[in-house]
Image (cartoon, rainbow, N blue to C red; front, side, top):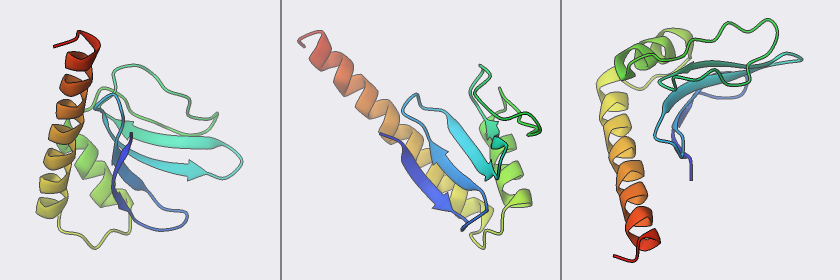
Length: 103
């Protein structure tokens, strides 16, 4: 389950944590795909003319989001929300693994 942290609005960036525990700021580019700034180390589908960046650290993703989006949320608040979401995804993954191994 993807955890939405903030959606800056239509035609703007969305900040989220993916099921894989990756932080991502992404924006749909009409007729071209998605521009992503993410902690994911592998290239994800982006589009022909979108310039995405992968393997960033959390601070760099937050920097890209706050600089490129129309967010009014203070960076400190976003950082706290990101930390909370990352913990939640990690805890879910641990619980799922315990169930899978019958613990």
